[in-house]
Image 1 (tube, helix red, strand yellow):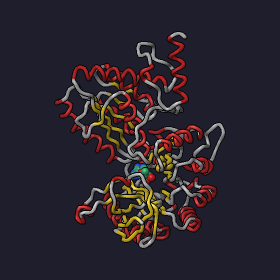
Image 2 (cartoon, rainbow, N blue to C red; image 1 turned 90 degrees about the vertical axis):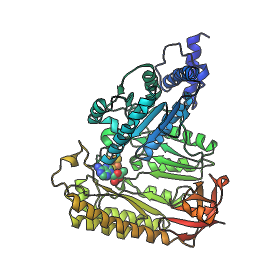
Image 3 (cartoon, helix red, strand yellow; image 1 turned 135 degrees about the vertical axis):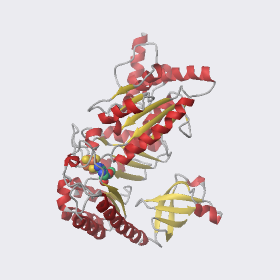
Image 4 (tube, rainbow, N blue to C red; image 1 turned 90 degrees about the horizontal axis):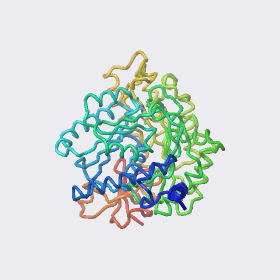
Length: 502
Ligand code: 5AD
Ligand code: SF4
């Protein structure tokens, strides 16, 4: 078999396995065209660079990743870390590293400001360690104005790429390691999904799984459809294969991720509903818990409610963003449901699945929102009794329809409204949590509890997550991490419980 042919065979094998053997790649050959094998080739090239670094510096190069924003970004960062590790970089605890990468978010302006703040701090570090490489990726990089600002104000950045070409990280990293100056590669859109690249997991026992990318909803305040592109679903076989591999590797809980999981599968060649996908995931042996987010109320089907109700593995938690409780504002937000439809849906879910926790997102200060609109939102919070709610101050995102709307709300009105809403949200969440005191639940132990409660009582505590996503602290040690235990919920401390293992 000729050299080229052998290389081809190895690449083909890689298409059917998660990771390919880097030692078998001929890095002196031309780079392959096909993905993901092309990226494995560049990981091998980066590894060669790492070996050169080690010879010169007498140590491994280190990396540091910082993730801003949502769970999708957290999962993307695990993929970046998987590639950095495969190339031979070692994780560092701080930004004093040889390769620093910020995976950014732009959903609200404060996320952008935090990135600029952190970048400012990096400047001094790079002066002390001139061989340090700085890379930026994620949603913020899809905005041309951001790229302009980085070019002019942060010229020490080495590599910038976006959300659509993140799968090319190995190739881009190699190009950046081999060149001086700023390398920028931003794509406007993509219809590609590249499978089977290496990934790293933050927790050995749980993992996020992307089931779809992008969003087609164009809520009028939201930048996500512009920076993450059109909706694309992964093939169910790929999802199931990934979860099976994860469970074989010790994962007991998965979180299926998408901007709007309820519209999963519509654009597949053989369409499949989200509820059908869940039923397939449920069958995977060894998997104990299934979570998912986020659900758009307009697409949440009765079929999904039934599947959740009858499932032994789907957790009793639904994140169902309300955004506003005023039909008038919902219309301006382009949410495509009314206040009444939302309330009816939430109450139906509560009656079908009584032990479910419903959490939500609410925006305060959307253009044109009056104190009366906010009262309607507060009224929905009281009616639905959210178990938790993330409240956000409206942030104007350039390029979205809402940014051009008149009557932006005054800061004073927003502040007052926000505080008022927050109080109701907290009271409701506390009331909901108190309902379960004295009951028994199953908790997946996630980590050793680092806060004061344990220290004061000189007893070590661990933190577990209940099916309904609430947190419980119980006496125990690190050996319990990753185990599911039955606990009694002895005391409610507002947003978490103190309990005991039974
Ligand atoms: N301003 C404030 N909050 C926003 N969100 C999305 N876009 C904006 C914005 N422009 C919130 C929504 C969404 C959550 C992830 O972020 O509530 O559900
Ligand atoms: Fe943004 Fe709406 Fe899509 Fe969610 S559903 S990502 S809020 S546009």
